[in-house]
Image (tube, rainbow, N blue to C red; front, side, top):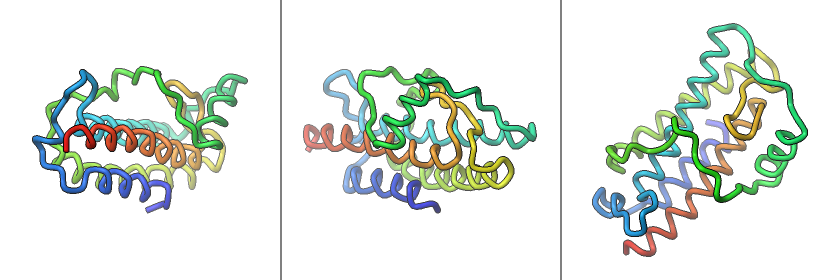
Length: 168
């Protein structure tokens, strides 16, 4: 697995180590629980995988033209590794809250591996340029998808650790 994606798995497993399903499901402040954060992350992994498979099946990249805004956002997130706060998650990656942490951890490993394979296949087929749009940030190249998921997972790992401190 690519180091950026392997780091995603490490960030999740380290942040949730020792938590049981009940602790991970606790929602004290109206925000997502730890289990829901992990579910959200996994939904982003599967969403990227599905999008890349649509490109591969169609035989063409599905990236829009880069705009000044998308370039700036991509630089902020992918290059600088900064994740903006206060942005609402797209509907398709909002957690359902019906999945236990133990299930999500096993699923996340498999889904990260599937995403890694899809990114590799897209890069081999379409090259290093933009291949698929992120729903908020714009067109990403394969390497940018890997880095985005690392930055995004790190952002949510911090939230997991904050919630974990309140649960413990």
